[in-house]
Length: 303
Ligand SMILES: NC(=O)c1ccc[n+]([C@@H]2O[C@H](COP(=O)([O-])OP(=O)(O)OC[C@H]3O[C@@H](n4cnc5c(N)ncnc54)[C@H](OP(=O)(O)O)[C@@H]3O)[C@@H](O)[C@H]2O)c1
Image 1 (cartoon, rainbow, N blue to C red):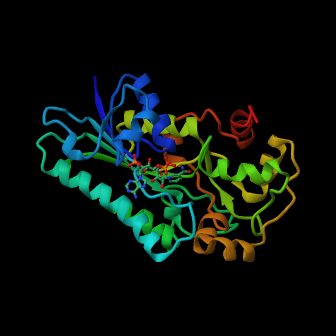
Image 2 (cartoon, rainbow, N blue to C red):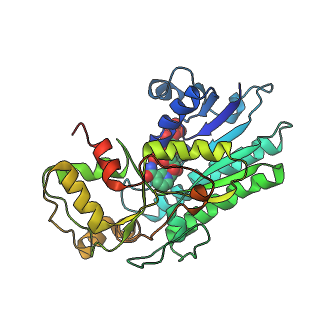
């Protein structure tokens, strides 16, 4: 049985991923800051450790998936919180690197978190952005760049590294869960001018894509984890309203977003590039939910 070590395994993506990896026959070890509560959130077969020191010397780690990080969309981006976003990600990744650098047995592959925020600001441009796309500098870009640079240290250990440049993951948690209450009350609508792109991905495809990156030894470097058909905010709004059978006609003007959410609103809500998953598609990965309409009708079938 192969063994995989996961940071951030208790999170939204991590929990779905752990279940899938167990189903596929992996021995899954999750590092959590709170082992006591983590146990109730994860399948019983997951081995939980509170720190890297809890890993026994004889345990061979074949692969590492690194998702841990302070949540970004929980509130305004104050300077202390921005520092925490960076430190929680680079700190965890640096600690992983130091641990394996000092260990005789090294993992063969590291899949490390990143985000479409790597490509930085953008609003409305028609140019698709694949993994070779240019970046516009802003805080999101700096955060992802530093996270990827930290992970890149694993090159010196001979590991294959994939940076998962993840889009808006749609599932029972995350962005969709935050959007649902106003939309259910028929108070939803476009944000700003609605022209910003929203590269999204269904949680099942996210998990399948991570497993594909684990298996396909030819994939390395940045990999866009987004569905092949990103939509603009106006289209997302229209389709979400339709899926819920509610009108979605109350726009939130850009100035209001800036007042309410500050820089977080500007970078996460008012901007977005047309990111496409060129590398996984070229490698033969098939999305179960390539279209937003199918993803939403699957996720909202019980609403
Ligand atoms: N969900 C999305 O739409 C999306 C999109 C793009 C990128 N991403 C990135 O992908 C990663 C996983 O996403 P997710 O939605 O599953 O995240 P999540 O639900 O917020 O979970 C992140 C995990 O990271 C750990 N964590 C939280 N704060 C931390 C801190 N200050 N220091 C160290 N560890 C901390 C927690 O594990 P413990 O409490 O067990 O330690 C938590 O379970 C995140 O880093 C996120 O930024 C997500």
